[in-house]
Amino acid sequence: MNKFLLITLSALAAIQLNAQNAVKGSIEAAPQHASYHPTYSSDGSARKPLNVILMIGDGTGLAQIASGLYANGGDLTYANLKHMGWVTTQSADNFTTDSAASGTAYSTGQKTYNNAVGVDLLKRPIPNIPEIIIDEGFISGVVSTDDLHGATPACFFAHQPHRRMTDEIWADLPASVLKYFAAGSKDVFEQRPEATQKAIGQVFTVVNSLDDPRCATADRLGVLPPKVETGYIVDGRTDFLPKATRQAIDFLNARKEPGKGFFLMVEGARIDKACHSNQYESAVRELLDFDQAIAEAIKFADQDGNTLVVISADHETGGLALWGGDPAKGNMEGVYVSRSHTPIPVPIFSYGPHAQDFMGVQGNEQVAQKILKLFAR
Ligand SMILES: [Zn+2]
Image (cartoon, rainbow, N blue to C red):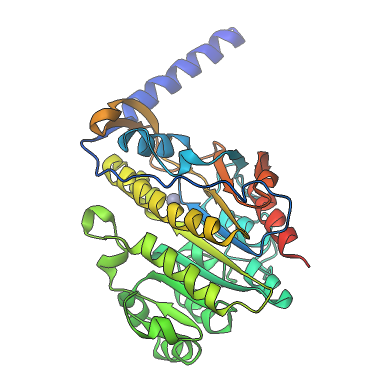
């Protein structure tokens, strides 16, 4: 058969396959929020920031952000930011990454294999940002709507050869340098071996609510709310992510060493999970919630003046495209061609001092390398 005819026929077959597998979804009258309009006073300045907040929208590609933008009437805090670029997400052993390999790239500045949590290709631990910057006097925290052992948050405190080694990941927590964590969940924590629970309790003040009075007095804090409070928005989660983001910022800011600062990783985990199951409305609701967490970080950056906020994703999930919609009514339609991750580059936004460092096209590991350079004194 003619080579070109063969290529054309394979391309047509691929389109046919995708059309058969495409899953449409919609959201009507999305609950809208007002975006935060930054002052831009520190945006793009040349002095080194003292604090860096890295925000990872798990599975958040351009179509996920655009769905949120139009569902929210054309207004998002994301869309008020001026410095942006692309991040390529390939892992060391796969063109399409998983959250563990990409999380490791973001937490250590090194590419590794899919499923690796903070270890290299030979399964040796790689120091993560919190472990590296503590030697310079900087403290760190982690916030996620996933369980704390989920691949993305785990990469910022654990070193294990496989993301499914749940007990081993939790057992790494007492030896970590984290000052603060808030993630799922009380239920998951109580399923861990008693020795692990005890060891964690000796290092961290563990509470089950962001409103526990001990949140204000603890030296090292772990917030593990009941499952429903960190689960999907459509299943009843309320304002956990923006509220925990604000609490983490205030907690770390109050405990940083004089003249030093902090690093905080915030993950909007359920955008990815909703896209895996092709639940468009759920994904859009999660994106809108993540945008409100972004607003908390940008507000603090404006108040503080020495804070850089970097917002990106570990990969895209679902091969999402926009199908139609009516932004005036908060109605949007999307279509998924996959239930997995895709290798398309993801957008990156940045705000504050050195935001300009993250423009252009870069690998996920380079984002971490740039952050580490800013913490080097
Ligand atoms: Zn995923």
